[in-house]
Length: 222
Image (cartoon, rainbow, N blue to C red; front, top):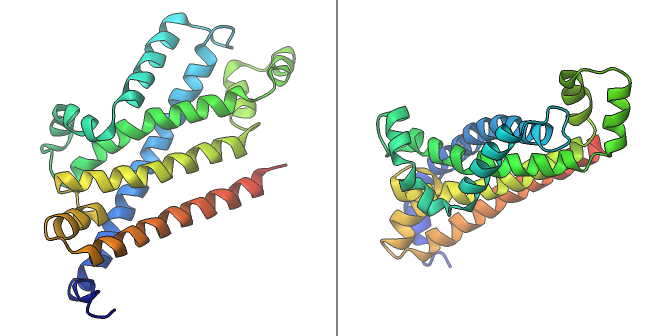
């Protein structure tokens, strides 16, 4: 067993850095994507037909944009948005550059998750809020963003788990992290033991995300 894991032992000093890079991309792109996704999700809900701020033009544009970026496989999205990445970061290679496609790929997914969660709110609650004279802004913050917090947390949890997989993919553009390490050693050098350990580490990260999400859902469930 020790001989089989000889590569893991030989390159053990690289694992902490790879884990740190993965977590950095997860946290940074996750936070940015959640903020953007929540904003887009709310806008889509309030501007849809019979929404509190119905606007067919805005709804149609955002709905199509969200659908477009959700439908593009992430491995194709990375080179597709290379021009945007270069404009923002000055390069298309590296960890900072990887954040751009990660956000562009994740934010629309979160937006749709947030839209679904908000749409599960009983319409009667919204109608009652309007009858009480609450403004659209008050309805958004006091009703739409409060009445289904557990549902939104579930959506974010699912999105963060999917994001871990996307972070592994951006290893193909030298973004660092566990994905990059798996490609350099596991794929190009056929070091199966390193690949196995990386898979286990990714599963652990996903498990931690799921546990945190489940605990938060339990906390906010009334």
